[in-house]
Picture 1: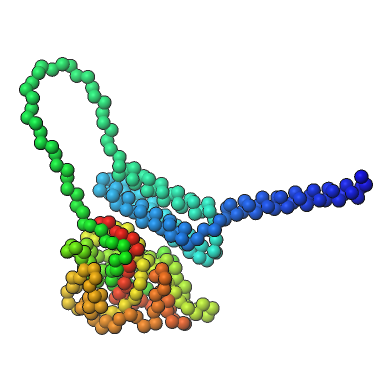
Picture 2 (picture 1 turned 180 degrees about the horizontal axis):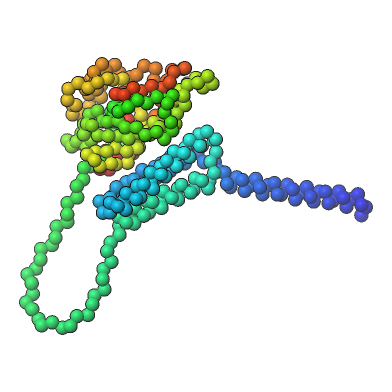
Length: 314
């Protein structure tokens, strides 16, 4: 074999090796950064809601333990929002980063459920010396199980009207900002008041884009993740479906149940009620958009109609 032939053969072998290495590196990169979607991130958010429910059940047995887990879960909730924003901006998310948050959420759930189900160990019977026979005691009546308080459940797709306690503006709001709103009327189901008027709903700014020279259209997405009734908090998943203009309050808050005319309710409690806010559009997932060139401005007292995406056991 000539020197030229050996050179050609050596070059070909080297080229094959380079191609194999490149394919291996590409496969490794694909393994590290897979196609994580917003639906996957939403599954993390759903797991946070379930974890809050587990912690609320634990709170009746071990308040200290529940408070510790709630603090951990609050940090994880912030990380889920961070992942959502990062995926929206960069359009990619590392699988390892996603898995880390998922594992930690499940760990919190596991500890909450484990504490809630834990029972005291039964001591082994000890050998006692023989005792003289005694008269048998009268049979004891079986102990009645303790009654547990149950307020019921708010069904999925229930809509609540809540009034903003402060101002929301796309020009000043930041992702992860928290805000509060109060329910505008009693929620009555099967003759029971499940959510009294004045209950607090906690919201969070999930995403925001202010109006600028490049992006003329301002958008802001807000969701609701907690409902507090008489001092007891429950995890919820609420999406805004409508923004209603209103100012002031007149008279006592009326009592209204599911299926009652929301317009009639609001007409009775809001001074200057005009209906849907002008220049505001509500898109899928609760995204609030303003007309071109203007910021999304929701003044204090604005009523947001919130749809509960999942049932809320009380």
